[in-house]
Length: 344
Ligand code: FES
Image 1 (cartoon, protein in one colour):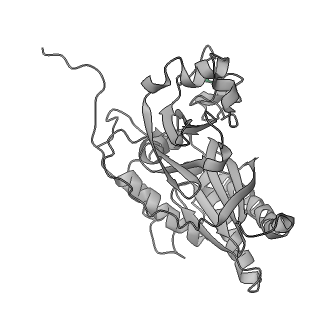
Image 2 (tube, helix red, strand yellow; image 1 turned 90 degrees about the horizontal axis):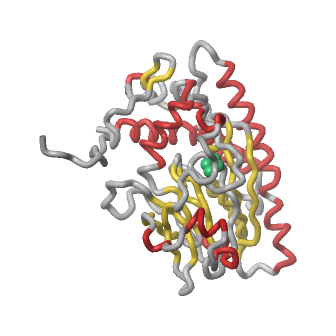
């Protein structure tokens, strides 16, 4: 049962909760298709992802080195929910829902109602794109940011469970979760330090982007010798780690529309590497990223053009991801009702 048992996920006659819809996608790799085409284009499917993935799984939202100082705050929108992680004066990290879930705008902007996150000048609400890290110096007194993200008494905000794995921060907003960690934690060697990072946004659904990143890295792997060796792994749902001998590229995928995703990149190098060698260690990733962008945007266009049948799933990483996703769609969750119950 869904946490919201009255919710339906039907778009143009396609019921996304009907597991029969995914029969061809769960066939053997080589024979399997991609997910139903509208899984990459539909706002309704995006809402289903919120119900079945973003409010269930441990989601990577960024890295601890991005908020090094006391009170620094990292905003992140998980599905339709606006949260943040803040560095405390004792160095620990605390996760909470933002005070303003939908803050300054008078109404939900029209773009949001079509599944597109909008650029909002006020806050990182569930409908807007996230702003970048807010320095702790802007959160010491009742600044506008303090009001929108923390309010006067941050301790009263709804807490968010967070965990770290090396520098990676994961958040979980499942209202019913009691188990500690469902998925295998990514392996992390603490000898790596974060030296750079940026965001880039591309016109491809986040699921297509994940497969393209792994495929691009694997084709580079096939073409490189021992020195240029790279490996890639997609950690469900939204983290891709690409490793070379001396560097790691972590990509956090965040949907900003049905056909668009933000790629939040963090570059790490071995801590014993001299600073002059950083660029050389990271150059391996540039052509690979370019290839991934080309693959992802081309695939998105192909999916949108394929009106009759779903295209074959040519990416093994994409196929593996689809199996995990379909399994999530079929999961039953305890339902809850947040309206006060009354005795008749
Ligand atoms: S406060 Fe939500 S879009 Fe502006």
